[in-house]
Length: 322
Image 1 (spheres, helix red, strand yellow):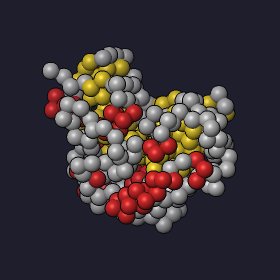
Image 2 (image 1 turned 180 degrees about the vertical axis):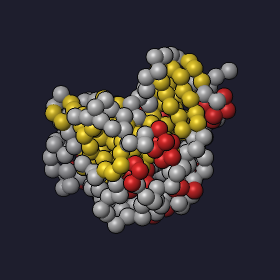
Image 3 (image 1 turned 135 degrees about the horizontal axis):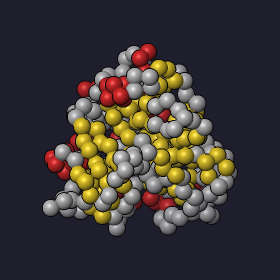
Image 4 (image 1 turned 90 degrees about the horizontal axis):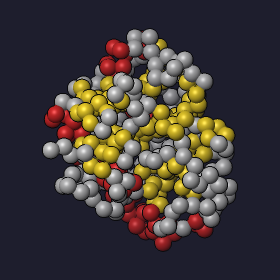
């Protein structure tokens, strides 16, 4: 299920702002303890259109050998996860765009592969916490235009962009982010001929189509009323985030990669934007970013829009170069 058309959804949210408080949500969230929260202003929570589970998260998806996959365009983006003890896995955005969360287990590690199209935030988390192993769903809520996830064990709400519980019994609990990256399908299967890819889910969805056509060329984000990024950086420009630092993707491309802050960030041509044309495979070139430390190890990072970095890391450092 795709989100409501942008104008219709915006009108729905404006009409419902007066109901942006917990007492109006208790019917759908009877297990959620709204007295435990880090949110000061409930108006930050907005409906994205679909209700709770209206965007169906997946669990234990079927996977197939990369060589057997058909129908995925060579330039289409996938989220790659490589964990010791497991064959490399690819999770195509042609599926994640419509499901946003995949609960899986790789090499004995329970993981949540997450993608928020409205922030272009694609991260993988370890689902193990001091409170047990969690399974995640899509709440249908947004905060600063970023997906609010929920765990099915306590129905606490989690901010996807930061991997932290913001409402409910587990408020303040943080998920450990695992190394992963977006690359093209061609790049994944070239490096990993014996790798695995998530098979097409058994849902009636227009897989391979982009319901957010031309979104990453828009002037403003959907359902976002916060401050714009500094330094004249467009709100929907992509940035590479590591911790509380952000490198504009434009700089990485222009310089052919950078080495600073103990990191080596590279860029390679060949990956399409999932948020440009109606057909994902035909999207404009955005390229593939890899982030490694001084020892050559992959580093957890995100490739999100500039407005989202500024919203969640308002005191963050912008790595603009000279």
